[in-house]
Amino acid sequence: MKKTILGRGYSRWQPFVTLTQKEVRRFLRVSSQTLLAPIVSASLYLFVFGATLGERISVLEGFSYAQFVIPGLILMGVINNSFANTSSSLFMSRYLGNIVDLLVTPISPPQFIFAYTLAAMIRGIGVGLAVWLISTLFAELPWAHPGLAIAMACLASFLFAQFGLLAAIFANNFDALSMFTNFLILPLIYLGGVFYPISILPGFWGTLSHFNPLFYLIDGFRHAILGVGDLSFATAFAVAGAQALVLFIGAAALIGSGYRLRN
Image 1: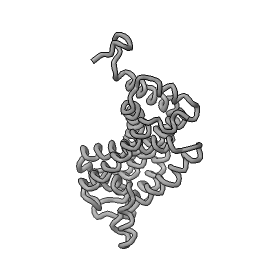
Image 2: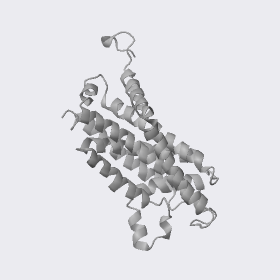
Image 3: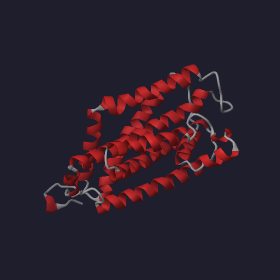
Image 4: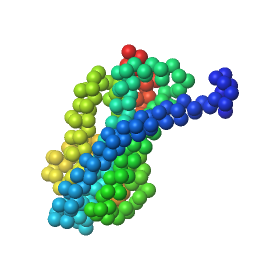
């Protein structure tokens, strides 16, 4: 249905489409930082764990170490870039004060959130796809359940896009924003089973790892690709989906109220 009050031909989805295009163009303008840099970093990981260790050690029966670690590296690229896109964009809008211009436009809070989220998912999935293409030089993945792998990657991207929005709202400066990445996301990624299976840890540490929210994303994604994992895919997806829903509700509540956005 068209809204004639704002002019002929105006669609209620036009603000959403415009904001999404703006966010996509924003990270494409600095693609050497937003796309090339994480791909180079992932390539170095792939060289170290693929070319040097890939055929020498194995932590999962029936698979090389390269095959085991590549799904985690793909998802790490998805997670980091989805978070970075929403957090940096919204924080800069707050910092520069132009967020007020968005708040007075005829865009609803859900459209606002999904525009930022969609752009972040395009960036995150794009980097993940690039990492996977590079990984084919080091090992071949069986892709046991490709549809489930895509679903888990999209869920991980969506989840961390919401987390990026929350981080941008609560961060008071650039240092505070970087702390979310350096002292929260990266440790959780490294301790979430990217480089080792949780099942080989002693009892206490294995149990503790189940409280790591990223463990469910990484294990579910690896399970979808290799066909095996520490948990069933349904369990991993359900837990990750619940986390994403909680973060989305939190982001919607804060953005809907304009909390710390009008200051």
